Length: 315
Ligand SMILES: [Cu+2]
Image 1 (tube, rainbow, N blue to C red):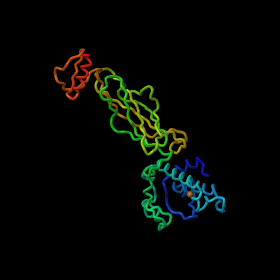
Image 2: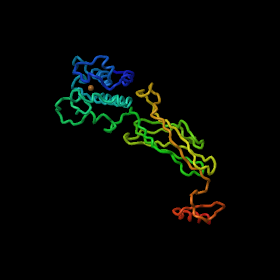
Image 3: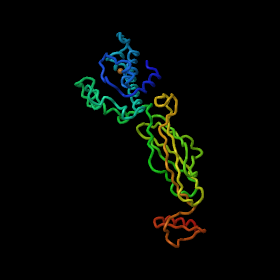
Image 4: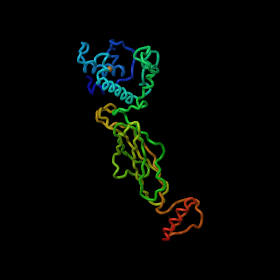
């Protein structure tokens, strides 16, 4: 049976496949060919051994088990095993996502093997199949997520703007995450103005997994702004976040149990520091009311609420 280490090492094999792309039923590739192809590694190292291990006694027929032969789908364990093979292929794709590691062959090989070909065990097909290899190459696109998938973090673009801030204030940024496993966020550093800081009680923010995983879960990362002094005006800075998950199996990281960094993101921060109690509006109409030494310049569209606040003052 394939061990955890054999699987971890096999997931490191690239490219996806290499010539020869097609084997016969009983013609195994050579060892160098297996070591030079993830498809052959998956098929011959991960997929094949569990069939005779479960049953029965390949190459000698054992009537107590059916996993060794063409009747293997009669055994319920067949489906566990094949789902696991699919899962490992999905891990490999996420581990090596780059144009040179995509599915091969794309053209020129026997029908049923090339990326745009209809998936068919027998040609011509003995059942009405129209699904191509390309149709099922992205398992997320067919609503399948595995516990061992790499989470997807979608960082919004643009600055995190506090707006007008009269005094110490905290705001946050939503970050969308798709995941079957917990994802952690930590603030690693701040840049620019020292008025921005990590709220003391925030620590590491953990989100997920949501149900169902194809839906997003939101991480809210808080940033605190304390005005350095009234009416400083525009204050800018940056916050840098790191998103990671714990890679228990060590599929993506160097060792099992390591943190795997999904990304480091720098977000621009903007705040407009204003004096407490002053609504600062340019081009105010002249001659507004004066209350307790402060001039309130109120634009037309805010007059109504100002009239109400004026009542409270006079009450
Ligand atoms: Cu099989």
